[in-house]
Length: 457
Image (cartoon, rainbow, N blue to C red; front, side, top):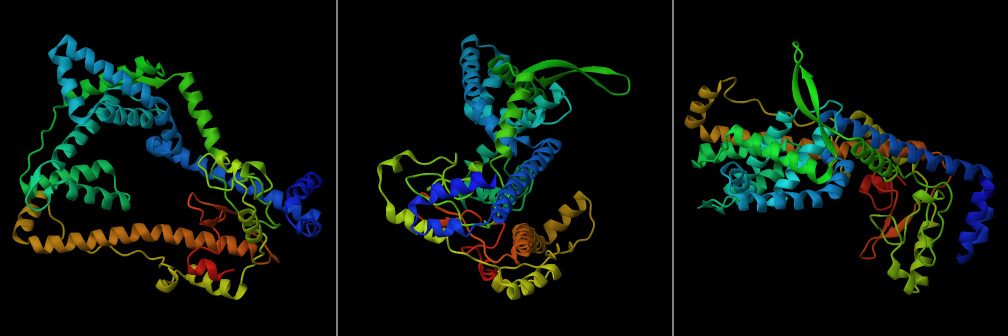
């Protein structure tokens, strides 16, 4: 393996004036270690993706996973077309039962309804249990009803906002930042506007929501043929209910997409040898072909065709010089940094946050039931408002700091691993505006990271 890699390196470095000298300094042992390091990064990426996929299945949130997004992209156009056809046909037949569904679909939007329904279907079929038709249909109907309510509230005139669009958009954004459930967020917004502003929301009856959900499930079935009806046994008395499950083709589709995305999220470690150089719009950097990157970042990791017509020797030379610059961990700085991380100290100047999150302030009113709290709120509106603001600040700060703590710990782990290496290297490429960035960023010390990340090298 090392001999093959050495020949690849030698052939790839013909464009570099120092290529022969660089190759001669690469030992067989270093090559073998580099190949093992890259394979380890691929395996860690696969393991991480599988964990996230399994968690999404268990939580019924496959629609928020990369696999779910790919399924949405694959089947949404046909589903939208089928829903549009249903609406047009129902209007021609002019039957009251169908027109009720059509009015709701048009109030939200044909494409929006198809999107919401497909998300619910994918989330439901991601799990191992067969979903009952009535439960899935109700979930779809409720999701569409919530969307209708929020859409109408956004357009409601308001003295303070013009309309409530700005208020609702801000509330959704704030709750999304702290990871709150979207369903809970929408229900809270509706409740606040009803209680404080006196706005009434046109709530749909359960029967209509179920009928709409069943109709959309049937439309998806006819349009794609990817689900089928089955009998579901439930309860201790062995009652039978109708359920839906994905056909073999749908399961195969999920497995194929999953296998594809497993390879798209590798862990990029610094290289123990100089990266493969750029020349003539090739893919360069790592030894393993699957990890190599094009000159310009691309979602599909493919070289831009238009660059084949441009001769850019200076660009290639600059990138190769940057890539051939060796680095090593500053052990003294690392010892201090690692001590701060391990003890959970906060150092705002280095963007290092405390391991202890902000505590949620105690409620001034203690424990009250809904009626008692309503009376307290009417009598002490400023107290409640101040507590809500303080609690929201704590939630948002903790959500932001969680990501920072994970990043700091990841950087410390990688620095620990490479602290005894005599030298290591970073791969670089360009973004769409020509700015240069290291590929190994985020989870390891790098020249363009935050201050502590830079100081470690």
